[in-house]
Length: 151
Length: 110
Image (cartoon, rainbow over all chains, first blue to last red; front, side, top):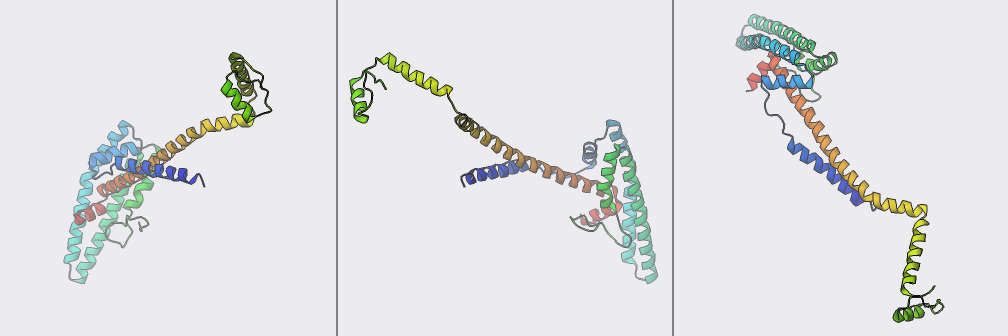
């Protein structure tokens, strides 16, 4: 019984350490391309040459990704505008084709980035990223990224 | 036990213990006697006494270390949680920047 006050003091110290550190460490509010590349470099232990290579790959892939994004927007607009059943079927097929093209391009890009990392880090990178960009056939929109959500 | 020469002290001792040895002893001999008894007691320290004494010395140290360990554990837990959240945040942001579907959805939400 005489140890209960001390145990409470220890618990208070535990909570105090947690709260003080949580307040001192600020959560990131935004992540632009530079911050993302900096994160990739640190999180996956990239050598400076590999980091420069990843930056180059990323810069090359940016316009491709933007082009695919614009094509998706266009296809979705066409699908919404389609009134005739045959137009609707055509728009849905086009959207499905784009989905596959985008998924393939994204996965190829991620594998290319992973190839510049140390082997184990590259595998970890793919394990982290692939579920985030995995799109199943027959579903529109983004994967559910919520905890426990269907990828 | 021989007693000190102080008459008041002698009287007090006599009242407290009528059977005591009331042989007068000079002050320096009394002091020497006390020191000798202290010295003999110190050398004859038993193990339980030593352990108790060590315990008294180490308990505050252990308490301070436990307090520091608790602070450190709380801090480490917060740090690990922050790192995990930061990794998730950047992984999501990176996924949006490389996946046209996510980019498109994200643009729609804005």
